[in-house]
Image (cartoon, rainbow, N blue to C red):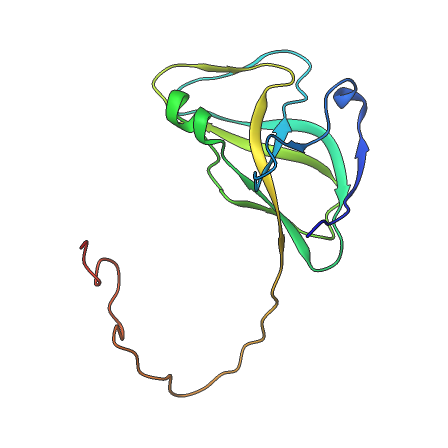
Length: 149
């Protein structure tokens, strides 16, 4: 399924590519850092990284912002609110909260692929209050109640 997303650039994104899929089978589009100068994040630190882009998602869709696996494995770079959700009615700049969970400082350079965006349909729910719930095998078993094997 192909969904059209309207996108505008802010001045600090000029010259950077628009989000795109790296391969035909990719689920996520790469988001680029639109920093105007290198941004160094110390170990345990976090930063808000601009993309220089604003979007209009079609009704019934969200954008999920997720970490890039290579940055996570090689450098400990992740997104603390992953997946971050961009709602269909948000019109501000797309920005990515980046956390350095690694042991060394990490520098984000202009144009670096910092996250990936997945476009997903949204299912909206309504709540119906009741006094009982249907029984299940698990019941009220909480964290770890289903074991590890």
